[in-house]
Length: 238
Image 1 (cartoon, rainbow, N blue to C red):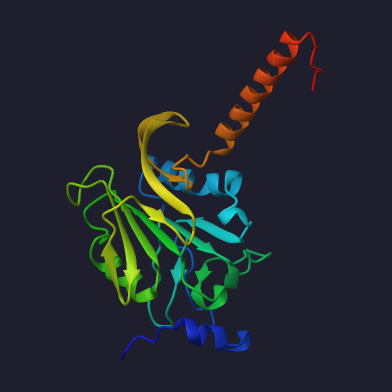
Image 2: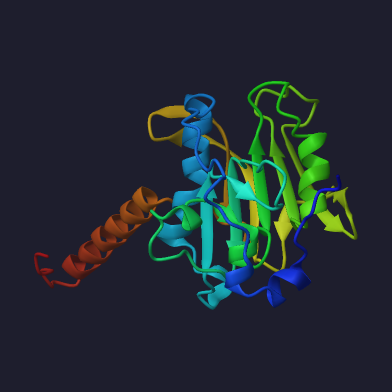
């Protein structure tokens, strides 16, 4: 029997009362994340978006999720992307009811714009089954981060959807319609020194984490206070 997948056109025309019933679906299976690095990397790709990013300068709504089921078809198991980003959608207010506990394409009305997979072994199918599956689903950009180079010589590969298939992006990883990009960064995040994948803006500046942003603001305040002292003005205590 052929799999019935909901296209964007059908999603837009489908009233909520005709959405698929989610009660029989398994939305969580309590499977832990792969490893410590993957857990931290997922957070590094989601938290800065909420802490520091104003999408496209126009405050477009978005959701960013890590390790959450992506349900796209009525009779198929979901994908579980390490990270997904979807613009111009809003998170439901009550995420505890089953209909809101995963990313149901028919509810959000569109597939995610960006999906990122973090390779931790050779069994995940990131460059085969998932590559084909996300293209079939209509994800616009697909990124594979392979920090241990288990799947080949490149630790970072990005794809753009052209028609029904992904085409490799050989240039810098930049998504012009989203105004975000991705770059590798060598540094210390939380308590771990490693090479990480991070978001950048149009000027290739890192999208800061909440801690980085707070530290930058603290240093700026200290510099301003010192300038005032040099002018003979004692700054007020906060």
